[in-house]
Image (tube, rainbow, N blue to C red; front, side, top):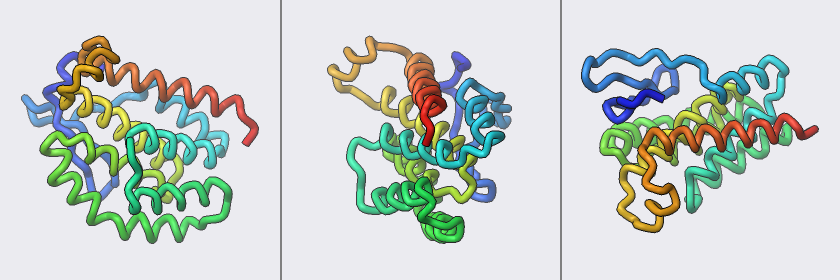
Length: 191
């Protein structure tokens, strides 16, 4: 990750249902190249491993949420039903569209104010993105953003000791490594 990451602005693109990163100094959109997580997710997509893509999105949501609120539980429950083949794309789309207003409000208020609760909610919402690849990709991005904002906003000394006063970039790299580790574990499972 770039050392100037703290100068980036994160905006939720409601048309494409994804997070966009903008350079705070130039105002230009940052071209996001494939990282290790994206490469593995693309492999899963190419192999048709949709359940594993959605499992990863759910894992990201659970990592980013210390406590699951009722609406988040509803989202995760539907995603887990989709993993088992018990929920349809139509059901996913309906709930995804139904929560669009909450996503926009979360972006407008939460992300722009630097709240770590905003990307935590958006990570959870992505679990039900009708496209399993997009669900996993966006959940991974929001999960990393959550880790960065949590690190920046934490005045808790215990948290600082746990991360050994790493920079935000180190926290994002650590989060990405955890994501890679989980994806590699998923590769080795039959379900």
